[in-house]
Image 1 (tube, protein in one colour):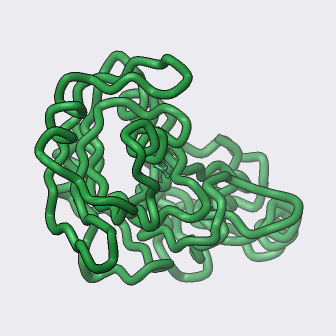
Image 2: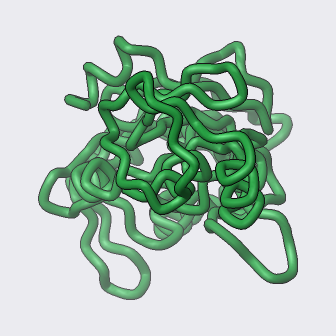
Amino acid sequence: MRLDKYLSDMGAGTRSELKKEIRKSGVSIDGKIIKDPGFSVDTSSHVVFRGSVIAYEEFVYYMLNKPEGIISASEDDREPTVVDLIDEPKRKDLFPVGRLDRDTEGLLLITNDGALSHRLLSPKHHVDKVYYARVSGLLTDSDIELFRDGLVLTDGLECLPADLKILSVSGDEYTSEAEITVREGKFHQVKRMFSSIGAEVIYLKRLSMGPLTLDPGLAPGEYRRLTPEEMLSLDI
Ligand code: URA
């Protein structure tokens, strides 16, 4: 990889800034001073720039607690996206693994690892996603059975069996709280499932995706790197 790209990928600056600085001040690569921005550097090389060692990380993984009101996209001309919330030396190639609706909160993985994203999202893999939902209406045990048997949405679409756990039912407010586990990720999946039983989702938050569970220490809008244990659990 070109030296200027290596440094820019690691957030040291833009390629054009870096070209000038490399020509002027040089970079130590495996103990030799290199002043050619096009020098071919190996990602396992020992690179020292501005007095600090810069190791190359090919993939990065962030757990974000998505706040409501932000769109799940990499970039948008008109409004900020979930990737804009990751305030780190920018890598241009970050994207969210799947989408949460604008008004949904909770766990969203942000990465540049396309293979991992494919594994988590591929319909073949049926990765469990757990959501907390507050809905209008009073959920009952017969709804649990409907979800377990595989709902048919109003447009005829058949859902895979899902687990519905009723957490509370409020007759006064005419609302219910539930945890729902789905194994697919169709557009507005959870909202459409509830809608098919006559309930409307008032609030939705994703709690987990496969082995990853939302860190309760992350307020909406906050994020952190995945821990080594979380990476292992994802086979990274
Ligand atoms: N299901 C929905 O309806 N919305 C989401 O954001 C995620 C799952």
